[in-house]
Structure formats: C-alpha cells, structure tokens
Image (cartoon, rainbow, N blue to C red):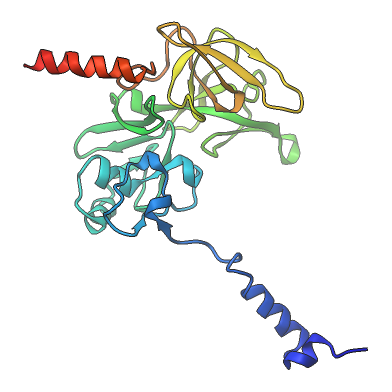
Length: 287
C-alpha cells in the first residue's frame, strides 16, 4: 500500500481539502469584474473607453437582462461624466427605482422597472425597442405609480399560504386564485399589492422580451403546445406582420389597449429598406 496524499504533501487531510477548495479555478469566489467587450450589447457601451464595464450587483434581474444604474444615468441620460459624479448623484438619494431610493451605482434595473428623479420631475420605464435594446422611455407621473409583472411561479408556502413570484423576484402573498403562471399582474408600487391582472390567452397584447423578435409588440393569435419541447406563441403586430416565439419570451401588456405606454415605433419592427425610406423622408422634410 502506497503513501497517503497527506504523507506526500506534509499537510493534514483537512488542510489538503482546504487547499483543494481554495484553488479550484476560482469557482468558489464571486466575480466582481466585467470586461467591456463581453458586456451585454444592449447597454450600448463603446468599445474603446476602457477595458472594463460596470458589473451589475446581484438583484431582482439577471446580469444579462438588466441595466446598472450607472449606465442609465451616465451613458444614457448624460447627467454625469464619470463614475464619481454618478455616485455623487446617487448618494444624494435623488434616484428611485420602483419607488425606493437606490444608492448602489451598479443596482440592476430591468424590464418594466420605473426609474424616478424627483428633483427634475422625470420618470422613465425600462422597455425594449424593436432592436432589443433598453430605451430611455419617459412616462407620466400617473403611469409611474404602477408596473407590470409576469407571473413565474404560483405555489403554497409554509402554513399553506398561497403566493406568487413575478419576473422581478417579488413575492406576493394571497393572490387572486384565478392568477396562473405566465399571467401579468399590475402592481401598485406604493403598496406592493396586485391591483389587477391579465390572463395569458389569445387576443391579448404582448411584448416579446427575448429571442430575435425582442421588443416587438402584437396580438397573440394562437398558441402551440409541444410536450417535451418549447411551447410556441404566434403573434401579429399592428401592420399585420406575423411572427412566432417561445412562450417564455412573451410578456402580456394589455387587453384591448396596452396598460403601459410604448416607446417610439410602438413595437412595430421595420425592415432595413423601410428604415432607410423613413430616414430619407425625414431628411427631405427637414430641408
């Protein structure tokens, strides 16, 4: 019988396990950096302004699906020139996300979040344009009082208490028993309670939040069920263009009319030729 690993290394078994744990390719450590080239493209960061980009803090939205507050304040609104100025703005408690003051410059704001700046009287909602990028979409003070949330889970908790979980990681107890997974709830930001909900069904208006059709808006025409695969939803937009996407990418936003205002273009995706013609028409009108 040969020597044990501890006899070969001179370390005890516990010390050997500790070394193995700490040198396992860094997998046990939280990553705190984000290289600029691998940052999400919808942040629209230029390539040559440094090696690194802000890394979003852990929070209600996934790293690839969110926008850190510093990117929104500095790069989109241009209210700051650098990270230091952004932090100065945030530490004055001037910026609210969903009605709560946020001072973390890398706080992850995501789809449907309401960003408010009381000092300037501005309110924004993070929604996608038809190219899948977060757009600076200004909304009214009345619209900033609520947001929509897609239901991801409905289950019973401890003590038999029913609750649901939304796409932005909110847990809402004692929901309406008629609410099911994939439905959309209208959340009052002041109280955090459900004011209304929309069933996920044909005939409702939806926005696509993932895939190649990201940011497009239309009416759900029919659904296909695929056991063991991905359920497919077929959608028709305002100019009768049809497209299909996975059920998980569909976010219901209204019944006859959308419950939230839409950015420029109203979720209708144009072809490259149509975009060119529109640009030329605007240039001629400008002259």
